[in-house]
Image (tube, rainbow, N blue to C red):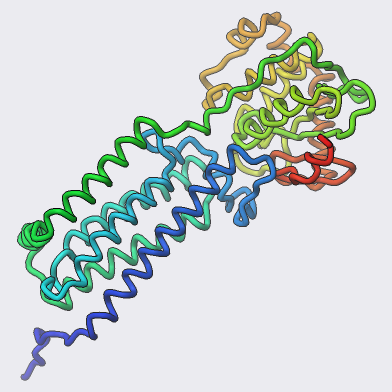
Length: 392
């Protein structure tokens, strides 16, 4: 019986068929990280921003950007991506030199892309089991990392690189033949990382503006609390929010600041739309558990003329609502503990919450935040031109 020889070497394609696709893929990752960095920043500072991939509750770049997992070592994750892909591209340049012999640097690049891929796997796990939402542009970066890993591995195979440990040693020795360039640029990348960790501006840390006694506040005929212009407001904004929704918190505090700066022009009306499956029929699975309870507590606080203080507190509570109990909340807001606890069974308070949720459903809301301005519904954002028109 005869057997075919399966050990014969596969003849590789010309080197540029490998090198330039890797360069293109790394550039895609680099520019993807730039886009995600800009989007992350705008999510926290721009009231009118909404990512093109904010499609649904399960597929929403903004939800991912606004999660605490979008920050690593006091720096937004996509900013780390810019630095990482930049370093990858820097190393890639040395693979183009003739003396690299189509072998050098590729083992180091494979290790770097392996680290990228492992981190991508961790982020994908967090999106699935903690954030419960996915970002299309983040998924693109996961694909980029896997593609870089595959190309680096296949190039090592095609051009007969040495075993990994030996190849790493030879790659480092090869890079040290460019001492000035390698040492200076590596130092710049290292220094940049340290400076970012120590000095990156934490624009995602948003605190509510102080409540001023000079800003009018009251309750509408339907029993909904409002703050801002008492008479003839130029712009009336009705918000539907969830106390465990980060985007709601960011945009609510942004609106509060605008109202504080223009108390005679803008009126902000607050309504509840907790994405808690125990209270909201549109939510079929456990999600934002406890937000319904906080909504009931805030309605009770409104009956005690303490709504806006409660509102600020609930938006700042730790997302793990299990750590918070009615006694602690009553003490923080100087409310009667028994009355606050009984609010969960108070039919009038329950009815008010149900009425808010039903109104949100009638308006077509499928998530939070939602806004009603001039009988038009805007989900997740308020167009800049409306705010500017109101301020004019």
